[in-house]
Image 1: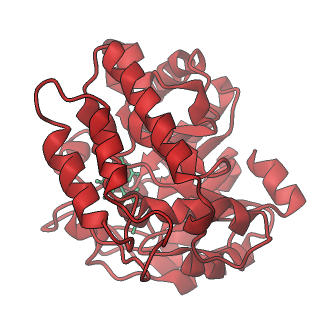
Image 2: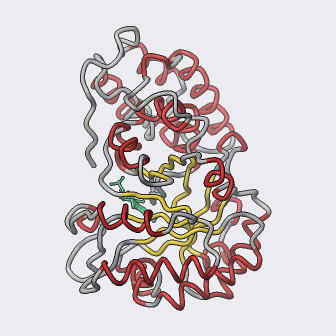
Length: 345
Ligand SMILES: Cc1cc2nc3c(=O)[nH]c(=O)nc-3n(C[C@H](O)[C@H](O)[C@H](O)COP(=O)(O)O)c2cc1C
């Protein structure tokens, strides 16, 4: 996928891995908005895959492709085992998390603290590559704690490239492992887009994507003028409508901006109602689907009411997909968005 994209000069737009957010239900919705965006799973810890309920952790709908599975771990044997198990589920890519700063992750010595040991990460990538039948990629930071990104990042990238990583996604800020919560670590350490852009110019033959603080498709298009890929997390989740403009943007036919006016909203409503019925028939709850839909109509008249209906009515006992119908009926679909939507966590 990445080698072909590079060869053909195609750009990749990705929705970031986000724990508790980018589950299968969320990805199903995102896929209705964009056929081409690469969708990441939540991080799944290798140990959980080995010992836990595999179908629950790894199962998803065929409609979600292309989907990348993000793994957390630092033990090569466990990661290899997880890659082997995941092969049966047909993911399009396996990604290693080298960016998550939470205490839980640090105590397992993986996630962002692996930035301290690029040699070890390289050996993990080599081990995973040896058994994977799909691209193996890395998502990292520009450094951690008192590391100097100007020296650490080029060295880290060189080692990942040497180990055969098919793509590297860089969250363009450090993680500060002492004293900041994971949420603060997504906002407080300053962004350094210039450094990441320079890394791309210095590595023309390797797929490099940028992530962090990008809030709309205009900014995404600016990054794509330099980078091979752009990854949005919070903005894509909170302002799901922006995904409607992605396919045109990466197809090169539009310089960006949202295309929400082109969406067949009633078809989307019907698709999501049918999907929610399926989810409920297999033991899920309506809210498992609707909780990811609240960001669909940022900027539309009626968006507030849409959110209220979904948030309050979808959790009531006995709630049916009529809640989705009622929520859509509250939105002025014809008029489209009144104002530029702004993403916030
Ligand atoms: C709720 C939440 C959960 C996240 N979980 C993960 C995760 O599982 N793996 C990961 O690599 N990053 C995770 N992140 C970080 C995002 O992937 C992304 O790097 C970060 O939010 C910055 O991008 P953004 O400014 O576009 O949101 C998470 C972010 C959020 C908001």
